[in-house]
Image (cartoon, rainbow, N blue to C red):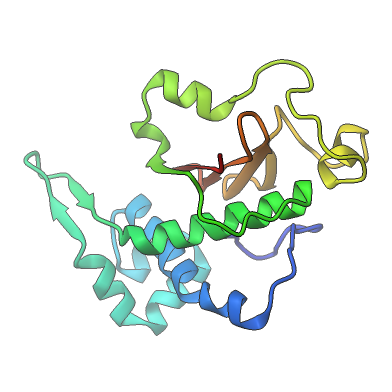
Length: 198
């Protein structure tokens, strides 16, 4: 999801090799799919992100798979249909990692809620809630010693309105615990994802 050079202090959660590798192809698919949608093409020459151009040049079958999901709507605009099982798999994994990293909470069960949509398609009220689900000072009261607590205490890491900007314009997320644990994340300032456990 990120571009090189990777940011310093990248959030990393330990996982066994099998668990980590089981998501690799789905993560590659999602990163490539999003870049193709944003650029309107599966042709590597028309893509902006170097790592995605490299992947699709080396894996033309993946480019063809993504291209096969594109249709034209009534007005001639391109409409892309992602493999939502793969997308949900990646988003759920990312959300679990963020909860573990920030709040030291492990959620072994599937989420009660998993919403995924382009930011531009969210209604104004839904987008406002997505960007600021718990307005007000100290909406999150993290466990003492957790990364979220250290951030509140001012350890120098950037957190604006609860959002952690991992790589500007590429990836950001926030975590919270109002009415259950939740994670909101944004990929490429295009795709918004809300994952919650009840």
